[in-house]
Each structure stands twice: as C-alpha cells, then as structure tokens.
Length: 222
Image 1 (tube, helix red, strand yellow):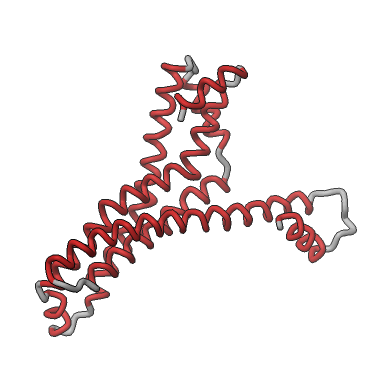
Image 2 (tube, helix red, strand yellow):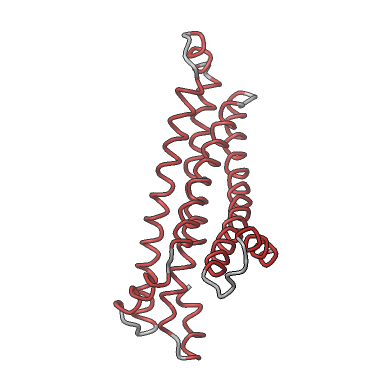
C-alpha cells in the first residue's frame, strides 16, 4: 500500500499522510479481511475435516449413545475459540501491517518513524476501532459455524470428508466477504447518524425538538 500510494503523495508533497492511510485501511478493512481469509482457509477447513472424520468413523454416534450432546462437546468449544481468537489475530495482523508500513515509509519515502506512528494513531477514532473489531467477531462466528455444519453433515464416507473440507473453505470465504459488505454498510450508516445527531445537538437551532432532529438526521443519511 505504501509503495503504491507513495508516488502520489510525493507528487503533492503530502508524504506525511501515509500513516493516516495505512492505519485507517488496515484497521477498518484490510486487517479483518485478511485475517478472516487466513483463518477460514486454516481453521474452518480443519474443523470440517476433523468433525467429518469423527462422523464417518461413528465417533459422534458413540457420543450420542453415551448420552453426550455432540453440539455441546464439539461445536461450542470451537465456536467460543473462534470468537475469542479471531479478534486477537486481527489485532496482531494490524500491528504487523503497521510495522511493515512504517518500515516501507522510512526506507522508500524517507518519512520519520515518529511522524508515521503519530499520524497513524491520531488518524484512528472510536468508530474505526469499533468497525475493525466488530468484523472479526462476526467472521469468527461465521467460519466456526460453517466448519462445524459442514463437518457434521458429511455424507459419502472419506470422499465426503474431502468435499466437505473444500466446501467449508469456499462457503466460508464467500460468507466472510458478504458479511463484511453488510457490516460496512450497517456500521457506516450508524456512525453517520450518531455524528449527525452530535452535530445537531450542538447546533444553533435550539427550536428543533429531539424527534425532529432524529427525523432530519434520517433524511440526510438516506
């Protein structure tokens, strides 16, 4: 990103904006998206193949015969692990991406590391962090659910395990992409409405009642 946009920033003498662009793009979109793709390809397929192998070898039937709920013992721990670890992996991805952006800015754009980090931190606000860490929670839920579903619905023996693993990867990637688009739109609208309400509440129009302010904000955002 730094290498592609650096030449344009140099043309306008705004190389200091590199930190802003890298921080916002990583935290809001690239970090959650890349983490979701990697975890889907690694964990969703692993969950599907593991549970599918247990189903084919009748281990799941043995658990039911012993009075154990497979959903509670097999699905719930994997779902909770995905909900906890995907946001942490996203934070790690963001930090590593910022380190790489800082190194590229220092060596290619001759930008000070202190200036890069200062601009990167100042560019982020609560809305960016909320969007950047809401997506990983949703992505973790999606990939764990798809992996468990594909694994526990395997048909056709060992060949079905392979098909379920491939299907978990394909469906998981598509679901992450569509879920990210929906979250982008939803979070963008909610942030715009809250920002407009803040501006309206501090405006020079005290004659507006609260319902009128909300209606006005809804009209503008739509």
